[in-house]
Image (cartoon, rainbow, N blue to C red):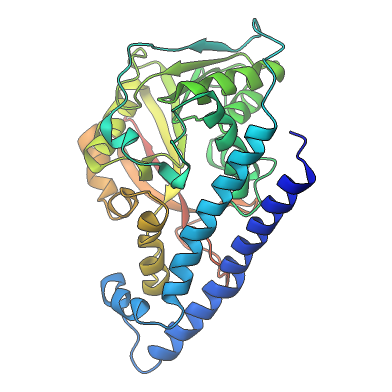
Length: 349
């Protein structure tokens, strides 16, 4: 997309504002918390939360996160409106698009403008273009070449021959494309509820010469054949669904997997650091992701066992390119950042 001077200036302003929120406001808030708790540090997120709320910078920090997010989506929406995407040149490319006109989107999915993106990602064709551009910017411009998603595929999924890989909640394909590039012999299937995102994913996959199947379906009821997948994966999906749907999605993953198949879900979990966990927990409210605290506090081991999966655990993930870390510990960082982690589990052989 070629942006006008005004669109670029607006986006650059909002991106700079969000960076200062992350690398100036958040450290200042943390310093105030450390000073307030120097005599007696809270040991739990629950104990830390009222202290965080009482800090001088907290309201400013919370308002800036939500306010800059709204500004970002407005700027991106305007840029897309000023630069409509041309019709795809390739209509019969290698990617396969399967849309379901009778699919009824669940209320929990349509009731929220997730990420504060106006209208969500499912409402119209332009929504996918807005989401694609915005998805880079909400990561503070650090994911322009989808570094997160390439690191996920490169470091989390063992290098071996796979027959079928299913990418749940694939969106516009940013995690699905690396799967096919890394495992070209595997059948790769992307599943999502949003038809506009799937159409964009298929178009871009065809442009890259990638033979990927994109299917519109609920991740908890994909309609794919049981026992046919070697890998069921997702990136930034499970924190956006209510607990019952998370359980149903895990059961569907187990149903899809062949014996010995693996689950790899890149998402967020609590770190055990009270201040950080207290601030991250309320990100869900500030960013219209109401199910995030529930998914992060879920007993994942129990949910996986209920679904028929074993050896479930969270493994820390460094989104800056290192990817999967060897153990549950995260690197020490001063700026705001998500507690990225990979849910790993497997279906018994």
